[in-house]
Length: 332
Ligand code: NAD
Image 1 (spheres, rainbow, N blue to C red):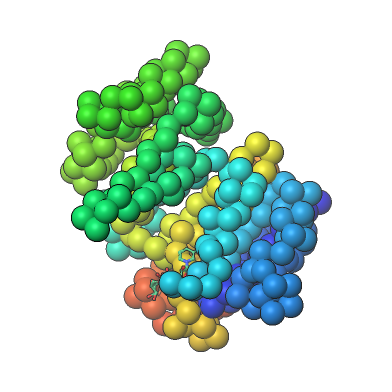
Image 2: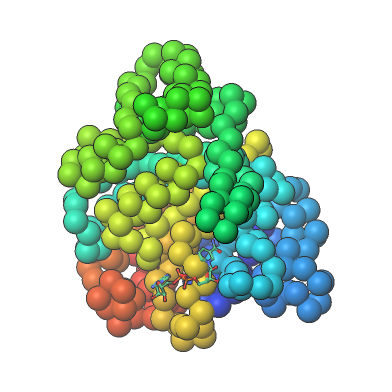
């Protein structure tokens, strides 16, 4: 049995996590849960939304599956998601975007993966107000971080039998920073002659993804472009309800849906568990439970295609737990 840290999260998190955990248990995957609470509700007890024992659990188990956590706007604690990525050095953000028949989306048959560098670029947050009328922000790109993310993308492509990696950049303008990222990507690509390699400037990439996304496969890019392009890709396949993600480091990984805690629906058994379940599928592939992952993906696709037991956002009337029940029934 592989022990997985399971974090229920805030808002609608506990409902989708309960539903998703049942689906994973029913798939035959050899996993057991180490349930750890983090977020707004543990603040009173531990004085922090991310207690040390939660981090210890993830470090010990090496893998976590997480529900969304509310981040207070303006004041209050910093985003736990950002803190987790920093603390555990989860340098790669993996964002697959695959069409599921029955989900309303502009395209059919898309199977894209965005690999986003997660630790540097403009997101290091070194900014300053120079004067009332001028502000500036530092963009940092290093050879080390660029190399590990590019290598991650190629290794992922090889493992998942993908045909192509596209590096996305703006090196025509940002010659030093994106120029370095591109230089490193080209060098890394030479070590993977079995995988096609190509380069795209980020603005052109955005247009091409809207017009002919079928041309693309795995895409690797610095943090800011990855943030934007990965949401664009999620939109191409149907949006938040079906978008999973993984944050991956050396020997450690945290999987979670892209969406937030949708607080207005808390306790209503209403929101779509699919993004969380598909994050579980990513997690299972990560730990080598390919069969269980395939079984779940197939069952989710069938339930959505049939359209009878789906949540409101997919045009149905089922609740979170009823949709999970239908998926479990399909696997039996
Ligand atoms: P959100 O994703 O929670 O919700 C936006 C809207 O999208 C919802 O009102 C709902 O209509 C819809 N939606 C979201 N998830 C859905 C689902 N599974 N099924 C059906 N509909 C769904 O975004 P928000 O309102 O901007 O954020 C709410 C809170 O979540 C904030 O505190 C934010 O910081 C946090 N958040 C957490 C994470 C995370 O934990 N990784 C990610 C994003 C936002």
